[in-house]
Image (tube, rainbow, N blue to C red; front, side, top):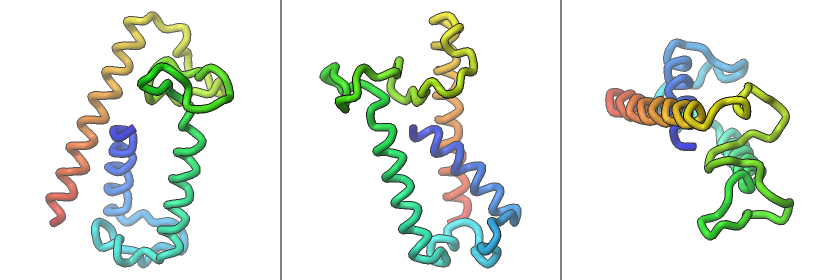
Length: 126
């Protein structure tokens, strides 16, 4: 999950640094300056959205003791971080176990690279 968030952070940082803004947020600066310039209600919406997403996806893996985190039945997840819900099918179930492991390794490595990328962008700005 951290790698996916970092991927979004790198893209968001670069897009806002290029001057692209949502309507109504044209006066918000990019980088760390945006933290102080962002209105409190936006932070409240961000916290509520994050809490909702975490609550909605908490059943997508088994706990370390081998049981589900909810009472809705068996989790459809094959591994931690598997957020498929049956609505979209990009052919994951048709892949061989070796191909699945390779795809997961690619995503992990891209996430690690994004974590280093956002860290580098943040350090460079300070």
